[in-house]
Image (spheres, rainbow, N blue to C red):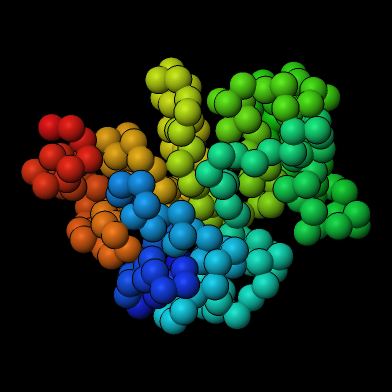
Length: 236
């Protein structure tokens, strides 16, 4: 479904991403783990057009995403839940969700309503508080809203960047349950996450990124028990 080939990204003279190759197959949860500054977020930003690649290729269902404008990439079925959530704090829950469906336009009111019903079924808390300003929500509630906003786009794949960051242990468990539920409904997930243990538990496959390069890759369960990964990322 998604293929990143020989990707290189620079920030000035800094070679942030070096010859990275990643594949995400239809229906999978693939996780990208690594330390702060390893380049995980840069890869997601390059896939969604927020950062320009120096060289390489990013294709999604046969479409060359590096040639697309960021505003067009979402129309191909690629949704992004950014690090830090970035909900519109001065807008209501409903307004935030409607922003996630902007590409449908006014002519698709029925489709937008159906997507809204789907999100409210998945997140009853959002339905109960749909007229409340997003800025009054807790971090965990804002993360739910950010995921809901991405689902409004009717995506084929969701890129999630550090969804557990800053959340309580109980809310972390809930967010990872949501990730599994979203995937069970047929949506592919590319997950960037510092909580390596949780990420590897829910993923099918994983890539370990170190200073802009893929150091290890393979079955997530095998990497969960890999001595090198355990020492570096799992505190074992």
